[in-house]
Each structure stands twice: as structure tokens, then as C-alpha cells.
Length: 377
Image (cartoon, rainbow, N blue to C red; front, top):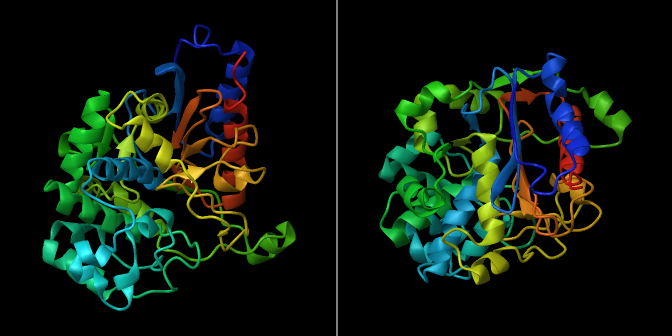
């Protein structure tokens, strides 16, 4: 365990900090998870961080859908630069995409998971072949009329956003994220497209625990989660260096907890390349009364990020003590990544262990988030 703390100077209560760190390490102590990292930042600085189990402070962990915050932040820059309009039809910019009824999909709908093709298939290595990726886009079909409902797109819409960034910026997506987002923030442990030289630092993804049975879900009073493309095979695919190098825009970034906590500080404090009016606009909820299909709670989506919102915020991956203004994007396996404008706290919790028991994993995230949001003196 390694803990570096600047918590007192940044306004944190040491008793509450200990409570958070003890909760973060619990599953490692119990033998469920092999590695955990956690970091909390405020006022642009890391207040405290810790690494448990096999994790070292500079270990890198796959962010999975927490990567969407990075991809979205890159998209905000081309919008800010006047190169991309959120109201534009995607097919006007990527003609190959407009087949099978997708010609009505707008740029904003890609960011808000209302585009209508949540389960569209795409193999990560196909990204490296431009003709093949465009062929995939053309093959996709709609599951629902764009804009009429919210249904989480695990990866499909983010592949299109990455293509849009490439077309309007004339840069490779991963190069754009590196030079326009990561480098200006001075972050050395954050990657979308993991270089071969950094592979030794990446912890392998693994699965732990057992799935709940349909009967157990029924006893809990919740529906069995739908089968999606986020399968165990897909998750373990990110142990392949070739997959890691692609930089899957919807779920293939790598980082340690410290750099992700600092990334969200930049989105709060305006210390990065985004103008304040851009940051204000992207945090505007754009999904209205649309609700997620599983729990029937409001989706509360900004432009590629989740907004905490009302008392149902724990269903959106936040702690119960977060303010309604908190925003971020968590990831599969229990990754937590958010910042709260009211307290100024940003949190990142990472583990390489994906718990098959989704209820246990969800409760852990809500517990850690709730304690983290209430750590100030």
C-alpha cells in the first residue's frame, strides 16, 4: 500500500479519508479483487491516493466505458473549434454511415445514446482498416427511431464520434486525444491507444465471483440485465496488446487513478484547452424525460457524460451524497470517475477485477462514491 496525502491542506477530514480508504481496500483484503487504485483530488491537486494488492502507483488499468469521458472531451474541442455542429446529420459528414435509415442520426444523438443502434457490431481491430470500418458503419441497422428513446450504446456511437474527429481535424483519433487533451494537461499515465512500451505497466483484466441467478434477481425485485456486447470474452480481449493499442473510443483507454482524478479536475477548473462556455454547455442535460430501459430512471445525459441529478443519482453511478451537479462517466468492472462542482472533489476508483455479481459491484460503487463525496472537514 502506498498513500501520498495532501488532504489536510485541501480541506479533507482525516477520519473520513481513512473511512474511504478502508472501504476501497475491503475487497482486496477479502480476496475478491487482486488490485485496486483510488485517488481523490481537489483544487487541481491530488489530495490522497492509494494502491492495494498487486497494483502499484504507476500501474495502468483499462478504463472501459470511463474512456467515454475522454473521447467526449476530445469531441468537445472540435465543436469548440467550429469544426463540428451537434445538430448536424452524421451522414452529411460520413456518407458511408447513412444507409439503412441512419441518415437521420445527428451528432448529438451519438453522444446521448439516443442514436438508435446500441448493439451495432464492430471488432476493435477493424478500426485499423479504414475501408473495413466504413463497411461496418454501412452495415449497421437501427433498433429504434433516432431520438425517440435512450438505450446505452456500449461502443458503437463512440466509434462514429472518433471517425468524425478524424475527418474534421485531419488527425488520427488517438493522436488528437494525445496532443489536444492529454498533453496539455501534463498527464503521463493516461492513454487512449496504449503504446507497446507501456504494456508492462498494464494490469491484466480478470473476472471474479459468480453471476446471480434469475431467481436471485427476481428476489431482489429487479430484471435480469440484458445481454450486451460487453461479454467476458470482450473484456478479456483487452489483455491483448493489439487491442490496447487501438484506443477503443468507447472503452479502451488506460490510466492510473491519479491521472483520471486530475483529468476531471481540469474539466471543473477550466485548466485545460476547453473554454468555460464549452464546459458549461456540455454539462447541460440533453435527454429530457428519457429513461433507461432497465430501472426506468431518467437518463440525465449531457454531451457524452452523465449528470448526477435527482435522488436517483445512485442508479447513474454516483454516490448518494453527491450534489445534483456532479458529472462523469464510470466503466465496466466498477470503475468510478466523476467530479462534483459543489465540493470540488474528483474521484477515480479503478480495479482490474470484474465482479460477475453485478449487484455487489454496484453497491460497492455507490458506497465508495457516497463516502468520497463526503470526505471534506
